[in-house]
Length: 261
Image (cartoon, rainbow, N blue to C red; front, side):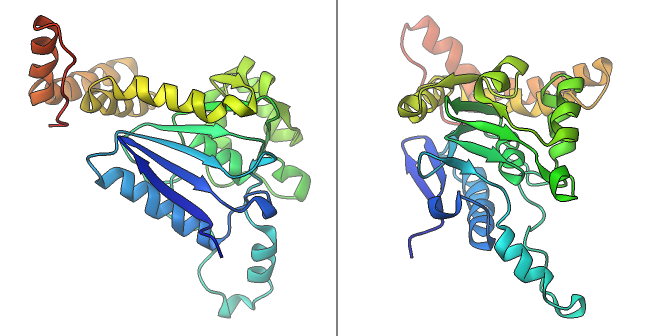
């Protein structure tokens, strides 16, 4: 059987690909284990500066949790069940990596699939993508960060409409409300994601990570506290070798050589 989660590296970019097109790229335990390992690999590899997350096929990015596997788990008597199929911490809850993740959404993106996409920092969608959190139509609710991430990414009313109806929205509507950054033809999706990744790679990686850290920490606190966080991180980055390399390269009219230290 082919790997159900593929991890590859090209230069300073890591590619994380869910590979279960026959199951709409739904998340079983093998996919979850692969995701956790991929996030840790990105975190620990100094040669990786940006990651692109996508899936195989042209129909679905991810249809969420594998309900067949979930049903099998629920059929086991409670006292005998193994751990819940969704591990914690995971990228949606508690597994923070300071490097940027770009999600290339290549089709249906629902439930845990949308929660996974929202665990990334920037989202690009193909024109055929449809996004939604349909758990309420199944007697459940988004429970792996969905209610909390969506209200932080889009206008509150738009988030509540998606969460309360469980309806899908088009890629174009997702872009209008800010859930995705850009919509492109499916054939151009990875090219667009790679172009964005290369633009990010042109910047100092420690600086990019500092921006991510201050932004995610700052959005949860007051402006006053956020400014303190910004000053703290700026002071740390200002003492790096790359902070000296940037102005030096500018003065010498050459591209900077980032060392990530």
